[in-house]
Length: 116
Image (cartoon, rainbow, N blue to C red; front, side, top):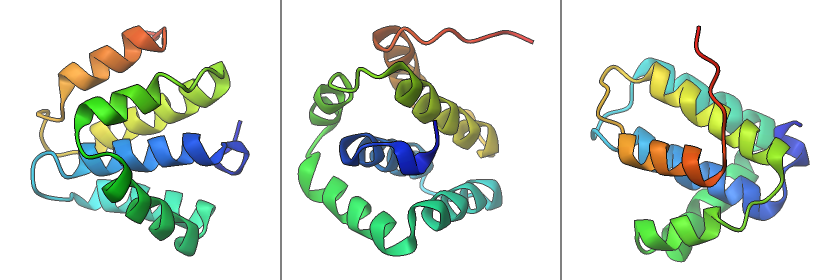
């Protein structure tokens, strides 16, 4: 599955999660910025900005975001979103990026992480 194949709701979830994780430590590393720029380019800058604006009005708190995440049922979409989120975490200079949300998402979406 590719980013362009995600539904609007799935793209919205991806952008909301990336924003949440990227801004968790109050800074944006070069790796994080590069990944976001790649995603914005693939989605189209205008669509990315529209999605980002929608996340700010739609998800007032983490619980509202979680409710939306639970509606994503397609395994390929879940795996793509989770994989991109893990790339963002790996691009971060620190490890304080909401590990509880990552664990929650992994459990709720039944994501299997292959070690090594």
